[in-house]
Length: 216
Image 1 (tube, rainbow, N blue to C red):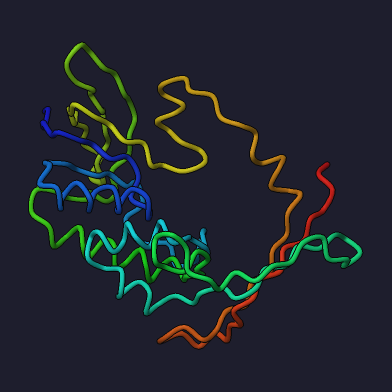
Image 2 (image 1 turned 90 degrees about the horizontal axis):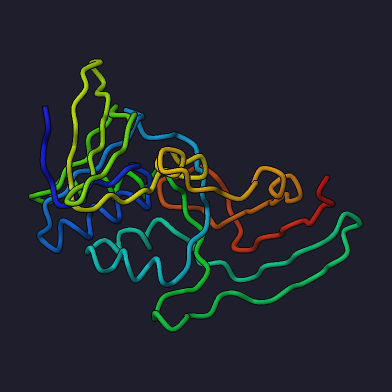
């Protein structure tokens, strides 16, 4: 079976759901797929900037997201010996009229984004759906997917947006190389404490310290 759309979005994380919501607000017929059925209960991202807040404002949930975030007021980078390499205040508003450094709890923001997608006509996010093949002809791209019940079908669209993270299936299927981030990530260790988020028992401070370690 083949289903036709204008756009297929691969990945139902924050980037994919924002893309899907923007498409819905623009009146574009689109579908998103996400292989996991449930939201991750732990954060994989903790920071975004004013440009991201402006995009969230554009889909009507800027104030709701901000109520669940805390602007950072300071950032400091130190070496192994605890010596400060760089420090600067970060609490100012940027050119987007939002704070440029915002700490957030990803599961809460993910839930808001998915609720916005569910509210919009013409777009949907299909959970438990995995991309297994991707081909294109002169007119459309054809995404072969496996559904949660084990059945397969093809989602055809003029455009495919790959929002499926660091280990992207889209990049792999298209033969697009990626940098070896795993080696680089071993050189960084971060500790972030933020002010108490609404509804959260965790205690935060609005500062962040990042430690630079030798890459090996």
